[in-house]
Amino acid sequence: MAARTHTVTNQPPPLTGYDVFAGDLALSEAVGRHLDPALRDAAEAELSLLGRAAGSTQVQEWGALANENPPALRSHDRYGHRIDEVAFHPAWHRLLGKAVGAGLTAAWTTPGGHVRRAAGFLVWSQAEAGNGCPLSMTHAAVPALRAEPALAAEWVPRLTSRTYDAGLRPAARKAGALFGMGMTEKQGGSDVRANATVATALAGDGEYALTGHKWFCSAPMSDGFLVLARAAEGLTCFLVPRVLADGTRNAFAIQRLKDKLGNRSNASAEVEFDGTWARRVGAEGRGVRTIIEMVTATRLDCVLGSAALMRQAVAQAVHHTTYREAFGGPLVDKPLMRNVLADLAVESEAATTLALRLAAAYDTAEDGADPAAAGERALLRIAVPVAKYWVTKRCTPLVAEALECLGGNGYVEESGMPRLLREAPLNSIWEGSGNVQALDVLRALQREPEALHAFLVEVGRARGADDRLDRAIKDLLTELADLEGLEARARRVVERMALVLQGSLLVRFAPPAVADAFCSSRLARDGGGAFGTLAHTLDLASMVDRARPVRTG
Image (tube, rainbow, N blue to C red):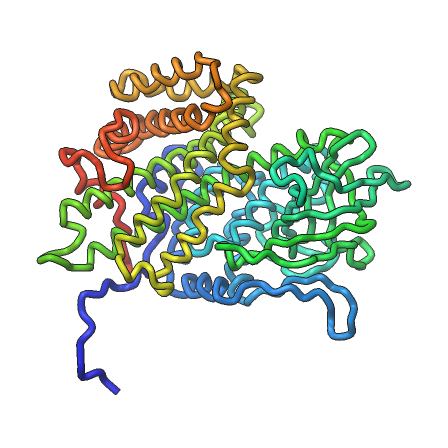
């Protein structure tokens, strides 16, 4: 029956039917900037195809369904046999299948693969962030497996496949495989050297039996896992297959699934190993060094994931205020709202620009013939934890402010903003929280002078272009030269490094209005602690226009 009491007016249309990639100028320009021209057309067409899917009503419904119907543990079958399986809603499988098919685990075998994959990961995470975990683990396992060439030859083709092959079967019988990871334990958390899981050598070369537990095991439905355990020579990295070659299930008891704040569509578990068969990856006692390449790659994905949440939050806020009217006109035209939106847009663009620069460094670092490879590897050593610390920290306040732009509508689940807000803290915690990242940067500063040199070379490329940036670089050098109480000052130092790095990139690559706003507010401190405190003399309107998503249907 038609309502007779009121007519629905002044409600924005849903943000659907748009290209998430092409509608994000900061992202699409970064892809064009960092890719070889010979690769650009094909990559942009592929990303635009993924972007239109991510912006479609259908895929947005998949994301909502996957979150409304979280995974469930099936510990036993109907007959009482232990099976330790995780059941997902069909929408989860559709999302993950689309992502794998788009090459989001295939960076290592694709020309320009890291830039292309980073952009795709940023696009697809806006449709649903939860399936980013298995995508990230699978992608990041490749460099760790290279420590054991025989294992790499066996597993890398499966991990980089563009075929999503769900279900627990021997990996050799599958067209594609996913990887998870288990490092943290109850007693240690981020201190993985406190791990108590024991690895006992078996008769077969490189074969071990593991006994112990993992407090957080990511993506427990995966085909294989990289884990740390204590062997005779010390902490060692191992590959644990979920199903053995003869078709029997490996000893992999899922005790429970975590009931998490966000990331609801994805499964995280507590697992027990009891005589679990595993193969060693790398030398005994070198576990942390072996798995660190995986950790670095997943940390970059934390930056990308946060940048994705930030971008989607900004897109929703700009879209809503463009169509919503109040106090005599569209909200987006009100000076104070415009200030808030412009400030959010600057933060989002800084995150995206930095993330794609680091992805480009991966592509160069992987090219052994490129004379810049060593410098890019050194840059990644220090810039990844710097970016991981700062971008992930900025995500939660940005999403909260963007939600506020929608008012009460943003506080309602149907808007999608609460899901973004619940997701926002995750990447700051995952793969080492803020203190872990800050201390890792200090280690690089103290032990790897080539890393600091690479960082200074990178920010130095923008020297002379903006006085505020030049002063910030000088102040940072003064800060770094002061060794007094350095550990207690680690967050302060890393924050300044991140701001200088972002500022240098925006001065070089962003429109003048964006770079001006960033340098004014973040480097010269002409702004307050909350978003929406930019100087009113800045070109706020152009920044908001640049951030506006364009609907095509």
